[in-house]
Image 1 (cartoon, rainbow, N blue to C red):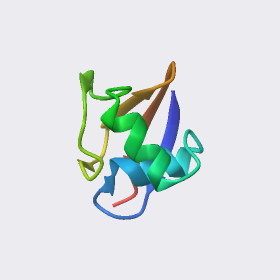
Image 2 (spheres, rainbow, N blue to C red):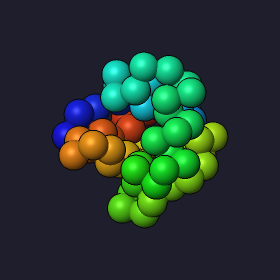
Image 3 (tube, helix red, strand yellow):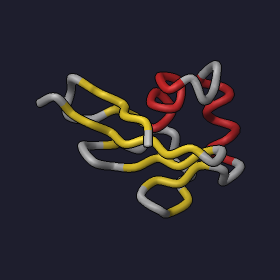
Image 4 (cartoon, rainbow, N blue to C red):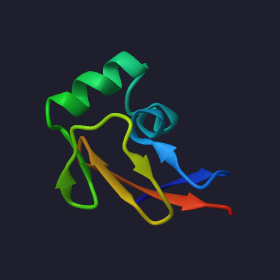
Length: 71
């Protein structure tokens, strides 16, 4: 599981996908999220602006990413 380290209390789902390199742009993030290809904590998520906090897990394209907040 890859770590996504953030300095704030949260990061939005679309931003997190871009940060990992799983998608190249916000538009790409929008489409994979709307297609139902992304799960957050095991549940399919269709909300690009969903706020992810410490220990939330994103699953996309057979990869898992965990949010780690430095706060």
